[in-house]
Length: 104
Image (cartoon, rainbow, N blue to C red; front, side, top):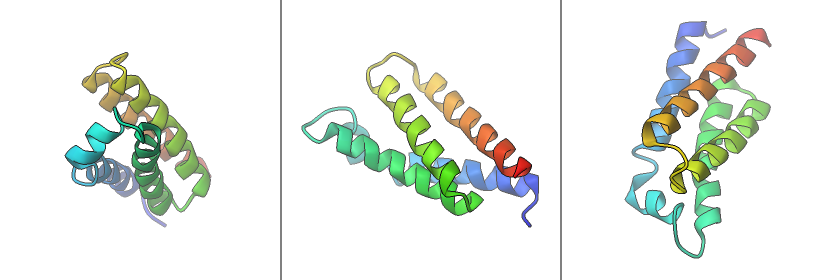
């Protein structure tokens, strides 16, 4: 079984990889504007969901990440929250998934 610090690092690494190199300029722009905006937002949230599901082994935590990530990023694209708040909320989600994983 993976220990708690390793799982925390893997969840954070999954977030960083999915939010930076796997997002890229195209997806960052497309999820905020354009005719397929919602599709691209879902695709981005799906990448994050896949990372969480792979790391934790839980489809339910992956689905939770999908919903949370989409809601947070939708608010960021409409400038309701700042980039710093966006990142803080994503990290808070990883802490919640870590707690759920540890308790399961």
